[in-house]
Image 1 (spheres, one colour):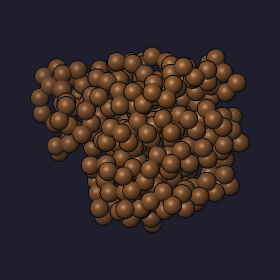
Image 2 (tube, rainbow, N blue to C red):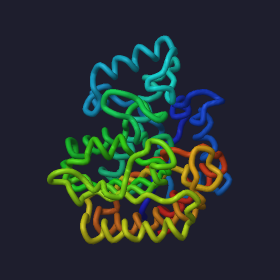
Image 3 (cartoon, one colour):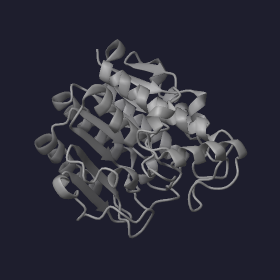
Image 4 (cartoon, rainbow, N blue to C red):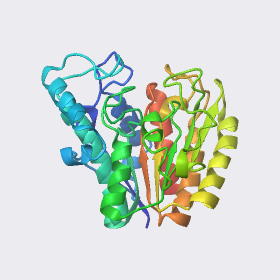
Length: 319
């Protein structure tokens, strides 16, 4: 039986910037409440795994040492911002951010080792796709995705990785770090950068140098619907199935692309997330020995968080 691991624990709720901030500390519980309401916590195809603290060595594989030291210092005082004003410091921010990294890496390890028959994993507080090597950005302190990509290669010898991002915001911290990497295939469906942060991810951006053609950026207009998303995702399916044939799939499934998110302008429903996860699940079994790691990403409407992320989990266990 194919199993799915869910990373859940109080440690992941520590990554949040206070009650009044869009990325508050309750986001994981919005997911967990819906998860329990649906009885998924009792499903025989799901195993709950505890969060894990990431090692500084892993964080330094992606991030500049001076920046890591800055986060450490900020976590002792809890003062100031780690970027131009979106990502405030708080006491313990280094440890909280390290748990995000460690939990994403634990999800990767579980999937790669197929511990207890687990082929898929979901870490709801992960997918921090804006963070750069030298600074935080857009609520993202450490880029757990970039770290996981490097770890998959270093530890498991994985070469071809498909990274799919359906968050409303372009995953600039991943894209520009790997835009010249010919073995990281990126497909990023997001609201057009003319209308929201970070303003990047134009359709013409398809990779650089030897990596030209290994990246897809698909901007959606404001008020786009499930129909628009699914039409775009069919392009992604063809790209992964016929061009990539990856050894590992990583999905960033931000819930901010759903209707009524306060920071974006798309009109999707959880059906878009269900569709994407179903198709990627099938492609993972076709090309990647079932290996797929999903990460929650953004999302700032509590109902949408529950609906979108449980739809992804359902897709993994129903197919």
